[in-house]
Image (tube, rainbow, N blue to C red):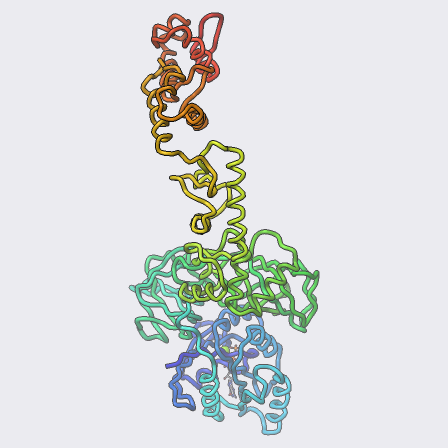
Length: 630
Ligand SMILES: Nc1nc2c(ncn2[C@@H]2O[C@H](COP(=O)(O)OP(=O)(O)OP(=O)(O)O)[C@@H](O)[C@H]2O)c(=O)[nH]1
Ligand SMILES: [Mg+2]
């Protein structure tokens, strides 16, 4: 059965709630104060099943809104998720201020379907009804409710006249209206929160996309806290799941109620991010005052509202009836996505002045030239999805865009994002997408960084992988892909953990590697009583120049430490010495050369350079012929 959400709209007292009741039998005015005052204050709900002309069964969920000018913000909380509108105009009053304001809101939300009902037809004569009908037809001309494509029906909730025509027309438009996408990622903007005895926390809302199942874990925006769905109700009936286009109630487990209020949004956990910076296409109503750059306004989207600051791109002022690209900075963040519609109301006095379409909810922090921003947003507005993806990936340059972020930015499932990435000819670096241009730049930087390194370090095998990645400021995915590609292309090669340019770097042959081990071992086991370097080198399999090269490498890597031309120590021997001398501090704070010789067993020839080394290392300080231990 197709589920469609129908909203009412129209001036106060024009008969919206009465019409909903006459059609559905349900009184949508649920508050005691509403019943007492005879007006609607907050949104109310009802439902009706109908059969479409093509015999399709339809379930209409009604959201009845208040007409009072002071409750437009409640009207906005209800109208965000509707698929079609019933514009209600009382035949005895005609078009009034909130007829216009509600209708403006419907147009700004880009509603495509609806009908117009002239209520209280019993209260006027046929002639008056004709005049009102003409006035209304004129008012609707050129809009989505233009009389040529959408009926204007006179009806009376009191006598029942015209109600069948209203139902018939509703069934017809409802069957034409496009269903919300039940396969998309779920979003439930919450319009009511209450606790039920023995039941716990319940939230309700119009499920604007996707499907929510019992036992699912949802994330609450903007708090980021999690909630488990303990139960689902659709139009008051328990159900295993709710699908897009249904009035939905969820019984939530493990949620602090202070986390929940009208305006929060529930969505699958770990999928989206809250944002307070959005780029939009904004339209100013012809009836509004000019909107200046930097103006503060009230921002409404779905059930949320907040204050926002408008930054116009490329202009200082937007004139009535005009459009512009703009950046909105919201005073409280929430989950908003490209394609979402919003309404702007003047800061004070509070009247509806415009609205628009969100194009980018992942707007970069870094300052851009207005032209650059405008060009990007124009593309977001008009380009095909794979081009939009390409532009979003390109702006991330060499950082690339992880697939998880594609989901968050574009409101796509991974299965939808992957084919787009292929179509956009993007480079796939693990789970990250990067443009071909950026990837080529990474390759250039990779080889030039290594070339520089080799020039500066002719005797080193190459750069450590991690060091190279950090030097290039790359994420792990992009770095790994670039490295793998460069190796495949034989531009680079790996030697253990070291990366070097093909044909560069120091490559040890077997006997060299063995000699290196022998040298290291000789010095390591000698401790402080080191052999002469000549002696060690003479016993190696490799020739003298190559042996010298190996020693240079060991010195560079700080495995060996040179204290004078003839004296070379293993770093571990020196470390031991430093430790041993430091440990003496409490018992023998002062030592002379003789004591040092006794203690270490080295000759004077070794003792002096070693003590000078300790002075340099700030382990000791020379005073006359003695040393104090620091
Ligand atoms: N004669 C006549 N009176 C009607 C009709 N429909 C509604 N009324 C009366 O008009 C008044 C307002 O009706 P509501 O249905 O509450 O109007 P509303 O548009 O819901 O008002 P708000 O929600 O406050 O904006 C009530 O006193 C109704 O009895 C009708 O078809 N004929
Ligand atoms: Mg009402």
